[in-house]
Amino acid sequence: MFYIYHIPNVKIGCTTDIQKRVVKQQGYNNYEILYKTKDINKASKKELELQTKYEYKKDNKTYKEVIMNIKNKFYVTNQSITFNNTNEDLKDFEFPEYIILDDNKIFFTTELKKWCKNNNTKSMHNDKRYVYRKGFEKQYNLKEKTIFDKIRIWAKNKGILDKGDSKTQYIKLQEEAGELAKALLNKDKPEIIDAIGDIIVVLTNLAELEELKIEDCIESAYEVINKRQGKMINGTFVKNK
Image 1 (cartoon, rainbow, N blue to C red):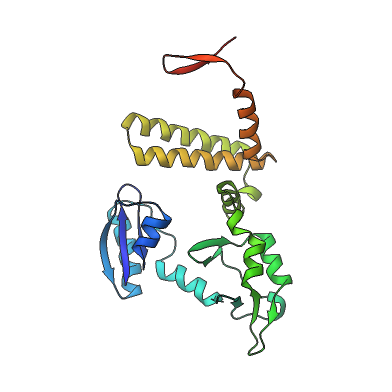
Image 2 (image 1 turned 90 degrees about the horizontal axis):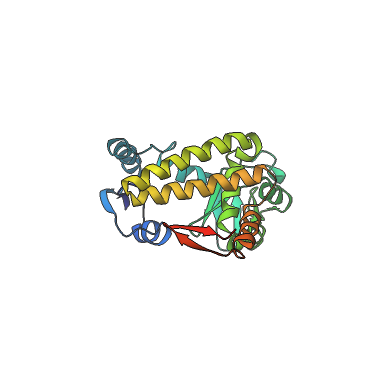
């Protein structure tokens, strides 16, 4: 069964497992089911219709296109990941943006693509090629990825780190700060969460474009503020001179 779910003020999406996708992965208990069907074509169409009706940003691809694009390129088992429709050494293989393993999105960075091309093996049963899943996951190091790592991988895949620059990211930062100010004035908690998250994303990308790590910037700032002495005045911490 395909479910079209609505998280108020957040999004409309499609899934076959509400509990896992919405509650466990996305962390929302407040949601409603707008539509359900056993037909993936109807579900894909209805998701876009409802995104428009509720004035959310429409997905670039339908639910079916996303799922089929991934499934048509890969065959995943507990032991291996087999690449469909490819020639020797994956020279002709067009990698998708990501692959889903155990409900986790693993993004294909340049390094991961290179690893796959250098470590694939021809199947004994057909002309397809595969890599060992354990080695693949170890290479990606999914379990040890921090949220900042994931942001940088996303930014890399979107071309932000290759084609963007610090000035545009700074302008983006000001835009997001304005969104936060508006959300605070309106006491709109979901928008406050969204704006703070967007600011962290922009700062992470800005640091990377300046050949810095946001973790180092945060650590450096903490080392300074940790030693400060002062007191609260009118809701603000004022350091001693």
